[in-house]
Image (cartoon, rainbow, N blue to C red; front, side, top):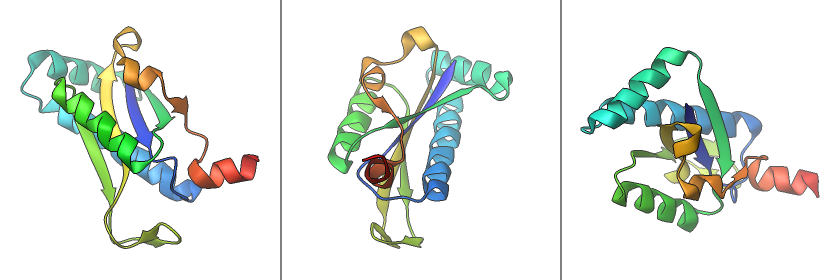
Length: 135
């Protein structure tokens, strides 16, 4: 059983900020699933919550438009998806206190039931700052 955080890879975020955004995504995805009207989704969430700590996967979702498309796709197919919006915190150059979509929280899923859209994403490597440091 796995929970997924899909972070914006086009933003420059410190390690602490990206870790916090992933944390928000995991928690919000689980809370959303625990209250979903679908009993199967609630049962998966309850099973995940009992695992302590449970597997968490952090993926690079690309830019804002791609994250929105992913969220829309999940919601259209009945998959709970938490949009994480950072607001009020300043970390130049991309965070000036204005609302910024930073991540999605999705799941939990059995590994075999993970949506194809998630399986196609790369593992998180630190966003724009991570990519610059690796080049």
